[in-house]
Image (cartoon, rainbow, N blue to C red; front, side):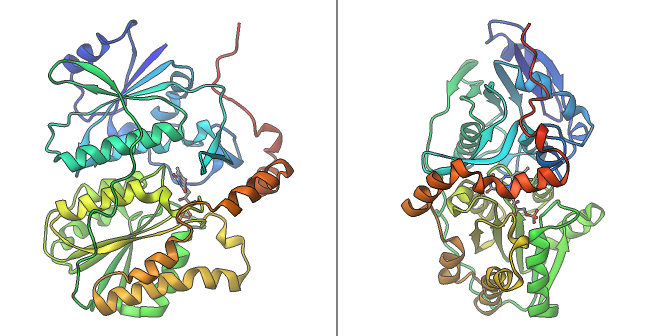
Length: 402
Ligand SMILES: Cc1cc2nc3c(=O)[nH]c(=O)nc-3n(C[C@H](O)[C@H](O)[C@H](O)COP(=O)(O)O)c2cc1C
């Protein structure tokens, strides 16, 4: 089976027909207009309450059988602000239930274990003539390859020019670090956006609370969950000198509602920076997003405050209060360095980013501990608390063999 999900705002039958003609069988077509896919809210129900199923019952939920049982999934996407747009990002975030919360090491990196026996190839189409500069087109391609690789899918791009064609995507390192922090103005008032979609128990919110307590009115915290404020905030952006987006990593990039807000921003004077915190311990997992944020800063013609990355944050709220304070302290210092000098201190950035890759010692420890189940304790405990442990290996959308 071949499934085609059209995530574009304005689906056109001509493009769909030209793409369908590339395949040996007629793809099953489903249009998922932006208002059809709700953003993932990071509740983890799909991992610890109803394994393999998202609690959100919208059109996206209906796609699951046609996704997991397909040989090929074709995604037609729009780009915006030099990246895939928020609707395409929402689709990708919502595929998380098809994987386990459990971690395994693949080629020295953390990955999530597979829930299903096999996964479809992913074929991506977007119009790269939609105002993308080569660096942006490159970052999008790298991001899509990276995502497919973690999803255990082969990745292809569908090209329109010079003729309709398919090209396999190959591994490439992230193009991060192409922009160095260059903002130099002392900051009187720093706007910080909280980009976590979590309604309860957000790690970002907890760290921001400490930042707010430390700097009072010098830091203005705004929660992007307040969608009704977006138009106002996007207009204010143009006259605000220093702005930081603080967000959790969602499938190698930003949560989709953050992308929706970023799409509203216009080029303007001033500076911008990013703080990304993530579940996996090694900060290099956020390098593909860092590469995008550098492109975005250039696109919006702002000076660059820097991008901070901190791994191993999922579950940090279970740690003793003293340990939590130790984790939060460098974030507070980081904001202090921005207020003082306009940009993130290189030393604090390096401190937060450690470990960038998993060390040989960690990999060895992982190998020894993996068979004991100790590594999966965090998720097993939550599955048991929710009486869902017996269902942990469910494959709710797999076609039953006849
Ligand atoms: C849909 C989804 C995708 C995620 N993708 C990643 C990922 O690609 N890499 C990673 O290290 N962590 C990933 N995480 C984990 C979050 O980054 C981590 O749990 C973070 O601490 C959540 O922060 P918050 O509580 O402020 O929302 C993901 C979480 C969710 C819900």
